[in-house]
Length: 319
Ligand code: ATP
View 1 (spheres, rainbow, N blue to C red):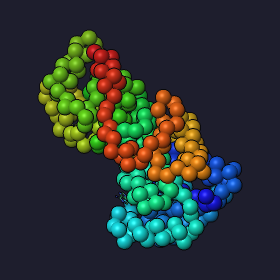
View 2 (cartoon, rainbow, N blue to C red):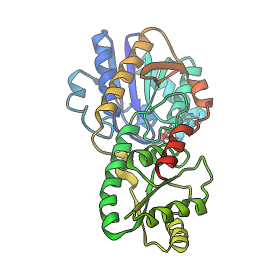
View 3 (cartoon, rainbow, N blue to C red):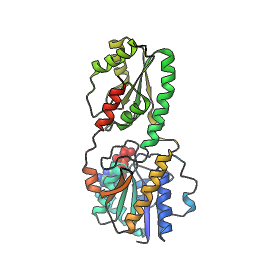
View 4 (cartoon, rainbow, N blue to C red):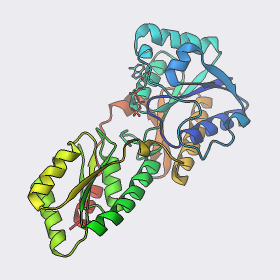
């Protein structure tokens, strides 16, 4: 292995830059060259590829987004585009690839590995929706943004005695709502993994009101229900004034938390170690604060479930 490539693909997430920096510097430390592939698989197909040096990745560890930029590339999913991607890797004399992205990007990485090209996947997505790893890169920063938002909304919510519905990201995985709800002391979380009993939820709000509670916060994962319709339901069942806040893309950006910078650095270095060790087709992640690697096909086939203990705890503490 003489030269490795690195790309970021799909939705960006805070901490990707820390991972890129670690890939580049670990590789150079070990005597390898690094090719930075811009705009994910799209840039690969277009040959938007440049050598990266130690200083190319200076001053990025604290920045959100990705210095390599990112893209969604439908062409790479087609056989012809995929073969062109493989040819590009060969043309640029790249011997191994680190792909930083979510499950879609991992599908591309798996195909490359299946075609015999050594590829390692780093889970870069705020959604925490990959089952094989306890945490994905960017989740902690997104959570921090959500918890800060809850704090601000809670202040005004108390002043006015309101119920607030806060819509957060996580169309298929409710982890941002779930962990954000627990950390932010929400009265309820509504996530895609569970059918929420709205009568039960309204009873919790009414119980709180009765004992003089000034506000209620409800975290709603996007796509589970329309926030304004949920607000109407709660309003009609509790008589409360209900406001809706949609946090949206604020969750995708921002300076990465120390945890995400550390995770990105560890995952980036580990990915390079894997390639040097001759491993291929691995998804790397973290479990019990230990770095882990598993077959990327297996990683993709695992079904993510919500953490029942966290859900139950959030429910009990909202009594
Ligand atoms: P996020 O979790 O933030 O949505 P993601 O990595 O899942 O990120 P996708 O848009 O699903 O984002 O996938 C990113 C890119 O990965 C696609 O645009 C495409 O280029 C590539 N990709 C996805 N599936 C495949 C596949 N089956 N074969 C080859 N490439 C793929």
